[in-house]
Length: 267
Ligand code: ADP
Image 1: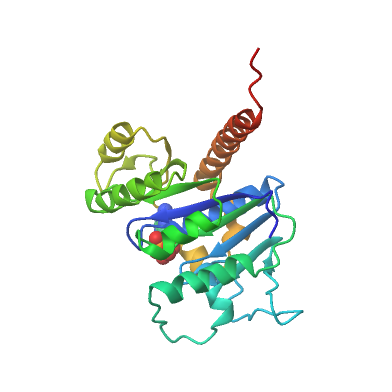
Image 2: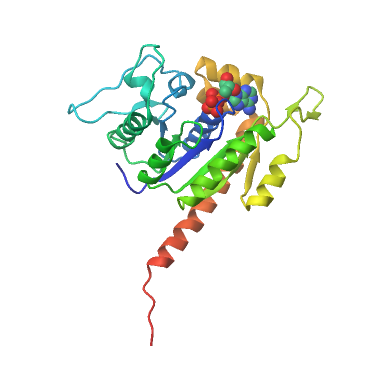
């Protein structure tokens, strides 16, 4: 695996909050900005990345019988348990099996010269998620939540767990924050204010509030996210800001890291 890639895990406390959608759009935005991007679908319980990129039903290939070739879609390198197990049987994974499966997908994929690897983690803070987060040598993690307290309560658990493990929390993304009607008026269907309080309480940046976009769900289902990205300006402009923020934040982290490696000269 190319160790120079910045590895960003996208995590959530609950399922269904839009973690995979954010992971995919982040990968698309970074790729469209000229970076070489990989996307690992580590959401073993509900792998949805193949469908979002219009490559579901494809199977991984191996040139040497030991490692997997990623499946490319619009230049983005993808790996998912969905490419390994292509029938629709629900998979029952227990802790160690789950860790091992994700481990294999991460380390036995021939990622080709990546600038960024985005990992779509399973929801929650189980051992598997945390083990992988540590083993993957993450640059940091992004936490995705919806506005409701019920989602924030679980995301708080994730935040605390990542911090305990010294994993940098790069910021929060609030998904499905509001809906803009045809007259341009915003409706905060699930309420407002919780995320701002959360961000202040924990000293973690609120990177973005993303709108509810019915077309987004449709394009995801149809596997047309990449092609339609610019046709959703309310979304693509937000992702431009998100990638700008991440690039700046990561370059700060890298600078701090390299400062730490400079030996201190004492007289
Ligand atoms: P998770 O990975 O957290 O389980 P998904 O990314 O699979 O969640 O999203 C759950 C569902 O919500 C999907 O059908 C997705 O298309 C839809 N969805 C996610 N974000 C939005 C949004 N901002 N607007 C409309 N639909 C969305």
